[in-house]
Length: 439
Image 1 (tube, rainbow, N blue to C red):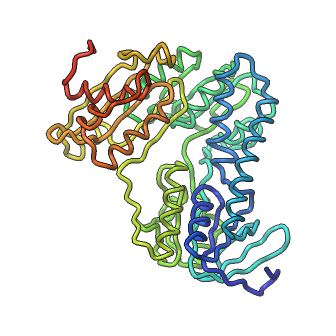
Image 2 (image 1 turned 180 degrees about the vertical axis):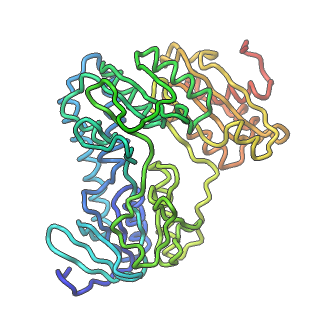
Image 3 (image 1 turned 90 degrees about the vertical axis):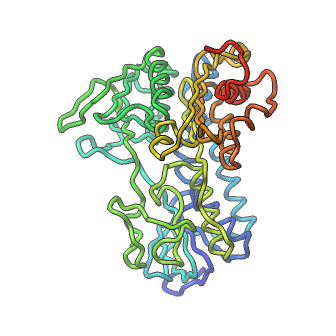
């Protein structure tokens, strides 16, 4: 590649090397496209390097050991992340994806400039995928300073455990961080902003159970907190997790004619196209739920649409999980959401300790909550609060995608004993076909 104003022509240029970006780049290359991927940092994006991967590793290790060496834990975390990142980089290389490390922006709808450590590059492209992700939203009254007021990413990379910590937020990230730090023995406050409830992404009863357990574990929870000018809290560190905003500033989208909404996110159609047909967007930058699984799916759809395949982004089921204590996962509709859409629903909740699995899997508390259309028995949603909920929920996601019914789930033989049996049992309870002594 030539440094300066001499342009390199490529079929597809991908902005961003996170889950949406590297998936789009690899899939486009598999489909015969000449691809270059651009990112100012290393591959893997925030999920791998700074977000869900580090959080999951730290929490798993904290739960595994009664006494934690934080420094050693951080070193091991970096080793695991480095190994995973290298796998992604090898995949890009194996599929012939060129990597340009630097900051890219649009010159117009067919040209892009990249400035990095080794100078400036210019590309002419036929198609582009914008997958630059998002970043934590700051509070005007409590801006991030990297010292005391931290993003979730900065909190996960602390060199030393704080003497105490306060977390402002109500989403799954805030709940996971509260779980992590209280497990590590750090005095923890969870401050839920006014107008929000904990884990609003999930059924209300699930959020209530997780909140109860957090309190039992020692987390001090305050509701309806107003973060006004001069807000102060007695703590060593403060983490703010109140949402994300898109990384679209500086991309010069206006030069390419790409439209954004009032919050800076990029609207797309069901083929991940922006208002400019040759320019696509995928992942957090599109304004959907900030989930890596969603970003990966959208990146693949974008690449296949570019290759002319008859694809459409229209998932029937989007599973979510939070590594709290107990773990929580859900897919599909809650009963409230289903009724708002006009469904006549049957909704049944089954305690996790109703079966034979609790002693084997340390599942002393939690539940399964199933939602179905009453007449057809069509599965509409499932919420699980139990160990390994994030692993088990995939069965329900597949069931919803395939249009399964309560009878389908109840008649499917599950391994015995296993936590996955709770899905079979809650379907049976909803059908009232068997009596296992459930209340």
